[in-house]
Structure formats: C-alpha cells, structure tokens
Image (cartoon, rainbow, N blue to C red):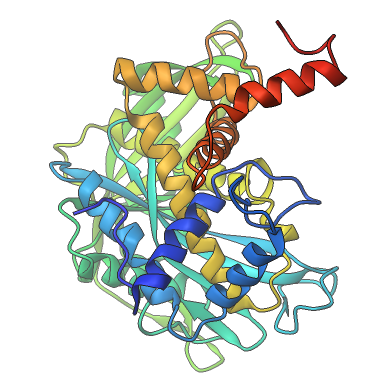
Length: 439
C-alpha cells in the first residue's frame, strides 16, 4: 500500500487530497500564501475555488485527514524499538484577520488567534521528525481535534496530555513511544497519571524539590553533590548559541512522594498519591576554555535503564524538532499565520495537508542513499538558494526545489503538450532578451 494512502468518501476527494498536498510543497511568502498552482492549469481561480470546497466539505474531517499521516508513520517506524512522541503548544497569531469569526484571545487582549497543540513523532536514533499524529486547535467555539473526542474547551495544556498518550497507543504504531514534554510537564499530579497507565515519558524538571537519599532537595543541590562525588562524565561536544561546548552527564534515582496540588472544579486541592521512583538525568554544557556552565537540564524519566543517560539527554535535545516544525509552518515554508481561510476548521484541515508535505520532505532528508543525496543537490539548484558550506539542505529549501521540479513536470506532462515547445520558447526568449539566454 502507498505510504501516503488516503481513504476519503469518493475518488475525486482522494485525488484532490493528493493535489493539495502537492500544492503545499513549496516555500511561500507572506503575500502569496495560497496553494501552489500547477503549470498545467490556465486559470488559477479554479485551484482556489477547489481548495475552498475541499477544506469546507462536510465529508473532509480532521479525523480523516490525520489518517494518512498515521499510516505513513507506521510504515516509517517498522522495526524501531523506541520512538519519541513530542508534545508542545504554539500560538497562531491572527489578530489582523477580521474575516475569521472564531479566533480567540489566547492570553492578553492583543494575543488573538488560535492555539495549536501538536503530537509529533521523532526518530529516536537520529532525531529526524517523521509526522504529527494528533493536532488540536483552540478556537472561540471550542477545541477542534483530529481525535474522535476533542478536549474540553477549558482544559489546561497538561489535561490534554493523557488523552493524547492514550490516542497514540490506540494508533497501533510498531514501536514503543517515549512522550517528551518541556518543563510545563513537571507536575506530580500528571506524572502520577501517566505512570499509573504505564506510559513512558521524559520531562524537563523545574526548580523544585524531590526526595534524594531520604531527604528533600532541590535539583541544583543534588547536582552539586554529584559534582563533588565526581559522578559527572563527559558525554559529547555540542554547540550552544553558536558557541562550542562540552556536555557532561550524571544520573541518579529520585522519589516523588509529596502531595500534588491540582484544581478540582475551581479551587486548588491538595491530593496525596503514591511515591514514584524516577531516573534523574542531569545534563550540563560547559565552556571548554573557561569552564563556565552554559546550560543545565534536569530530566525526569521512567524509561528503562537499558537506555543510557547520554541517550536520554540526546532524546530531550531532539525535542527541538517540534519547534523547528512550528517554524517551518509559520515562517520557513508555509506562512501559516497569513492563511486566508475563514474558520478554524478550514485552518486545521489545511494544516494536516501541509503537515503531509513536510513529512514527505523529512522522508527525503532521512534517506542517506547516494541517489537521495544527488537528488537533493539538484533540488537545491532548482530552488535558487545557497547553502553554507558543509550544511545539508533545509526542509524549506527542499520544498522550494520540489516546487520548481513539479512545475516543470506539470508543464511537460500537460495533456497534448508538445515537448518541442521548450526549444521554441528558448528561441523566442533569446529574441527578446539575448543577453540572458545562452546559445
């Protein structure tokens, strides 16, 4: 079966889905955020109209549009022991979009738009993003979701996590998921929930106390004690904010046994719970010349000890891929915050199409075969962009190159197209601009 299989209600919708995914394989600008128009189409308005009809079709739902992404992920993850499932939230700024009637105030009065929640799969071996498998979009009318049951409108971020873990388990991925969450996830109430249901997680700790060797201590105090005992070991050379650094790792066990504080029907309640023993991995980056500590992570996880602490730290570093995904959607490729769709549902549906375009490019980047490397070089040439020496092509550059390639293919494959047109066009262009056209 095709990696990008889709099963919408009829064949025309299936074809339109593939056309629209292809239409998102381009690096657009803030003033041209529509779907790419094939060279074989003479009237661009027909593409705009067809896109509007598809995104607002009652039979085209987020639940249907997420399935090709999940199917693609199953194919990609065959044989993978562990896979990272990274969760994060980002704001979509639509404060200047008066046509969108369901935008919502996210925080302060000028913070207007939608809030996007994403569950992104990341390859645990090399940190390559694979595909998002669930998305929520908070609107003024509630939360839209790829899940069969959307979260309540007033749900806190962390209230969405357990259902997302459960939904991910139900997708039957051929791998063991490790859910990676930033510091917002350091909540003993929620950690107890995740642990009780048997989910693996990796959370960056806040500045709080845990029980270590029978005493309540701050993470920083534990780190100082481990430093004094010589427990840190050099892990790898890294770059942080453009500066070279050396990462050092230490690991120990801690116990979370304090009562949790959690809102229950309004007031904050103190909720006791069982003690949970977790691995605490401390990763610090040191300036190799001055010895200055440039960064420190306190990482809490229940991943089995068969995964070394160095790998745990690298897995948390791979969390950055979700930030890169948001940047690719908003700035580096799709210009999401300039889309003109007039409802959150149309935005979410289009987001799922754009996500498949991203997944296709990520798939190409993961392929290290000689054929793929050569193909990517040609795409860079077609994009008209330039790379820093020794750097691989970015997803945005590959999107641009593929767009140019598809335009050429569309033109040459146009029905009844005479390929001799190329020679005639070149001859005519040389007549009007001889200095710019090679003989």
